[in-house]
Image 1: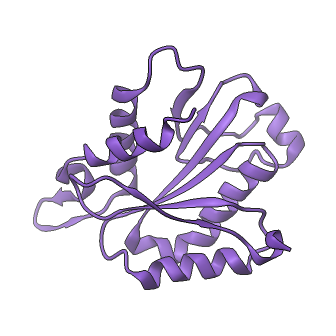
Image 2: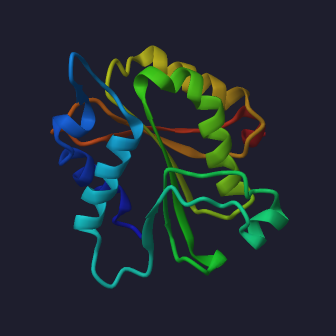
Length: 181
């Protein structure tokens, strides 16, 4: 699915402020990953190419999946999958999404999930999408540093979505030093 990068950029650009940063009665707006992911799913589905052999699914619970149990990968629930359900040979992309405020702490778990789906489950692409807030170079460096130190077989594409109305961009592909050797 060559057009996934373009589709992801278009879909993220269409996410409106109220899905990006949720208004709270009596308080300041907050970033809510699930609200953002549901809207991202919606925007991607609106643009999904007709006749595409892959499906977009959100937060598929892999518990009790016989093949993934056998592989030791059944304890994961990625945010989005681009795949052919029922066909382990049709695993195209796995996506994890995290608001910037949670990415520093969430990176180890998310990178591990992405790595397992690349290495064990056979997905072709792994995308880590960070959105909102202060996505500074320091946050990107922190995530990159964690990826470099890990023994996880990457690559994982790191995408950032800084503001509503703007497209997410692929900022770098993360590699571990162990995988580079």
